[in-house]
Image (cartoon, rainbow, N blue to C red; front, top):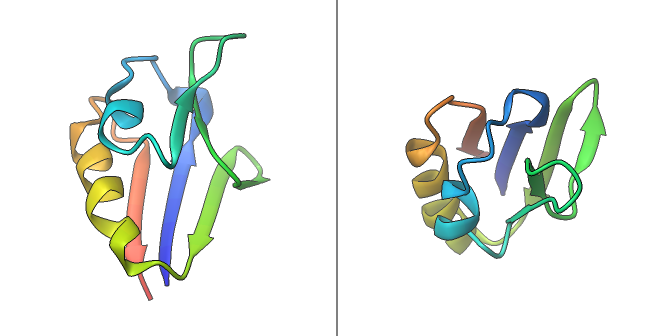
Length: 76
C-alpha cells in the first residue's frame, strides 16, 4: 500500500508534481495549485491510498522535486 499526502494550501504552483507523476497530480485551473487526484481531505491534508506499489517511484520523484516539501510518500 502506497500512501501519498499533500498539504495543498501551501502549494506554490510550480507544477513539478504534475510533471513527475501526472497520474496522481493535476494543476487546478481555478487557483493554480496542485490537486491530488482521487484523494480525501482531512483538515487540509489530502491523502490517497493505493495498493499499486508501482505508484511509489513517480510519487517519490514528485515529493523530492517539490520546492516547498508539501508532499509525503510512504509504504505500509
